[in-house]
Amino acid sequence: MTAEGETGEGEALAGGMENAGAVFRRGSLVERPAPRTARALHAHLRALGERGFHAAPMPVALTSDGREQLTFIPGDVALPPFPPWVMTEPALRSVGSLLRRLHDAGAAVAVDTSVEWPRALADPAGGTVLCHNDVCPDNVVFRDGRAAALIDFDLAAPGRAVWDVAMTARYWVPMLDPASAAALCPAGLDAPARLRILADSYGLPPQERAELPGVIEQATASCRAFVAARVADGDPVYTKSLAERGGWERWDRVQAWLVAHREMFLGALLR
Image (cartoon, rainbow, N blue to C red; front, top):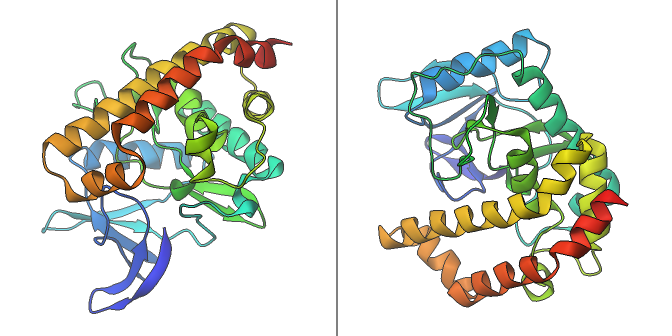
């Protein structure tokens, strides 16, 4: 998130949709609404830190009024429409490398299976790695043009690594038809080449490369269902965003485009 201005509660941080207007910085701390999985998530983040992954906020405390305090990570966070600097190839490579570091550290941390992790964007196949599930530009802190940290783990849930790569690809390639991509990203992005760059920088093995286009289609359907549930609940943020970004016709167009170009993406990944 980026600084938006001072309030009586501290420096308001802009960005994100889940907690819009409810995240504040106070010096070296960020205070925000705590997810219902906060205790387990905090334990997981601490365990990641113990294994050398320091590219995420470190939990500090849970407050009596249902908020959490985390360490503030300095840097730059891009908000839509995304500026050219965040969509460069070096930036994309750094995102893939950062995601791999998260998964490698997480592979050594047992996921608490007694917790009811969020299912809205979780891998329907399940898995043993705690996936971030929302590695969009709004949730990546950059320094000197490189991805330095991930923030906002509210939607984290167990899944397969390839699912998290697919979710990440949706935003960073982006896996959108040209008209939809033009509304969010700089012009001229080569989607097949960028998907290959993400897979290469992550170090995705051949079997998962072959699966990735189909998993991206599945992840896109999950994201659509996520938005539909929020709109059905009357969420004003998601309702406004849906209307501003082309409504359900846009989602239809994106999903049809992914299916039509599946073989093209598969060829780029496997050549």
